[in-house]
Image 1 (cartoon, rainbow, N blue to C red):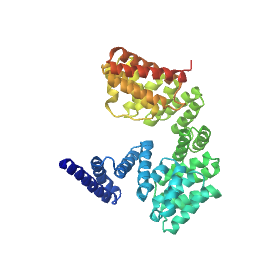
Image 2: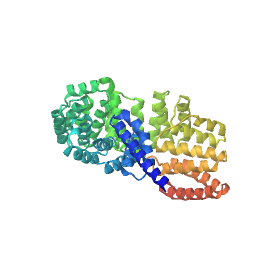
Image 3: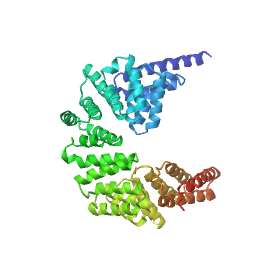
Image 4: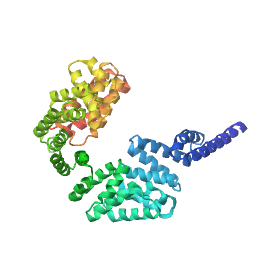
Length: 448
């Protein structure tokens, strides 16, 4: 009994010791986080029910996951840490900044305004004012953004980021650009070009196209075509085809007939179901720049969406030969080879790690599942087929075309049915569930 009690007390003491060391490491900033992480893990193992220890472990996990791109889960962890440790200014600020970076501007404003009300220290941090000013800008609250920058200046903060935000706030309100300040900010901090272009898209999105055009005109002449391409791509990412076409027209006036402009035009045509124009434009883009991996991959994607299988295979094969690591290129080529019973060649496609968006993952996972089925690895094949189905359900409407449906859903169904016939009971149950999911998915995308 005494020994058990001694062990409990010892674990309690070790937990607090590790927690104290972790807090000391966290005070060192980003450098200390790597030291604090295992210490907090040990502290939680000693005291698994200690909410505060778990909160700081969640905080560090959230920061790491946010850097890795797992935004939603990271924000949940950071918010949970803030709820348990609301008095920790650093946790509060990092959560609010993460909200800003994730584009959740209204939430970020609420968190930042709350942080700045009663706590003095964040008011002296550039990161606080940058996040607050940018969130105001991206929600159209231009006077509040200007006022925030003035308050930052009162605390002695006048960084290139803050000067740029002030200039953008004045542009949003008054319609004129302080070119000298903007160019000076970009010269000192070139990465702020991305901020400028994102705000240019936002202005165009809310109907201030003249202001957006004046803002982009501040860029060096050599950068203007790339700037308009980025604005057009931002527009497409948000499915704003009218804004995208406007940006493409601006690009075409600067760089007529460029491969980038042609491909962006293809994307707009595809969103309008004008597949003949999209396919023709993709062929033109490849003729214009036949060695560019981006051109080959994008043209190949248009062919996939349009159901032009031979052209898709040709362009994606050329992209892979040029060193592409695109998952869509790999999936399209591997599926084509598997249909011709060229299993060994299909397997070689996945010798390297490939990445891509939901459409890319649908094709790559389907191809890998087919390969594993051929290799008589039903559990692994089922896992990848289920992941392909997950990605299918996440496809944006413009990507779930009838040709894509015909490429993917019958193949996944065939894999599920084959596993259902031949695997053990547990795997068979998983295959039955997958087939039911695929049956539910088919009517939503079947255009017959």
